[in-house]
View 1 (cartoon, helix red, strand yellow):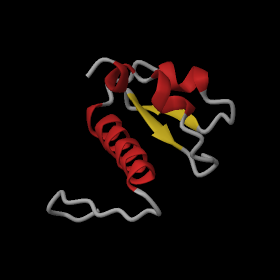
View 2 (cartoon, rainbow, N blue to C red):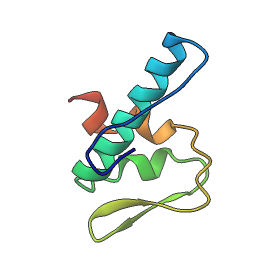
View 3 (tube, rainbow, N blue to C red):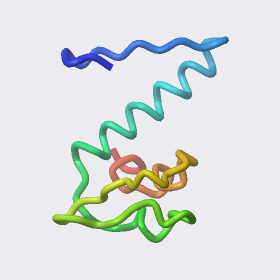
View 4 (cartoon, helix red, strand yellow):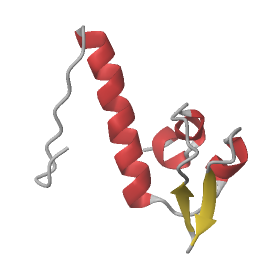
Length: 78
């Protein structure tokens, strides 16, 4: 990921790369547009998300399972 907003990705095949780039898009969208609804906190089985200053913050204990992405309203409805 570059300051210009460009993102480069590599993978064994196009299908896997598209899936990876979609996760990157969702993660960036959530980080920038988080409204602090807290839905992700309740779905994290590893307690790796906490609310600070009305936004979700990901802790170092995150294992990148993606459960929080699946339930995020910003991802589901945008």
